[in-house]
Image (cartoon, rainbow, N blue to C red):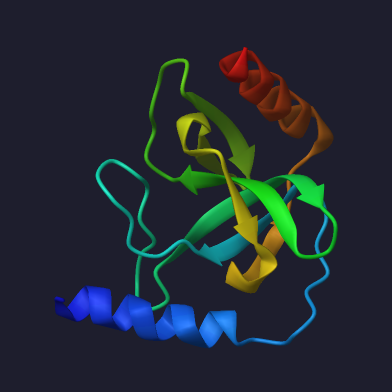
Length: 128
């Protein structure tokens, strides 16, 4: 096990034992501990292995469907670029996944209704 894998494993244990309640809503963007992943899956960055994730759909109080964001412009049917906090952000539609709220680190804000509707429509289209 290399140094990064060991660090992620320790953080994942700490996150899993976390008992805090997180209040979140659809359309919010949060820094989320995605961890070290396999192959082409999107990894988290920094010491918390985190990246911004938009909450697409809430499943009760403990799970949600999330889409990771990148600040790098990407194009094609698997991406959707929109303005968030005065910057361009790109949703990586192909990386849609269900996540536990235990992975949520801190809120970054809420996406405007129009881009949120477009993101949901693009995700639905991709899943057809």
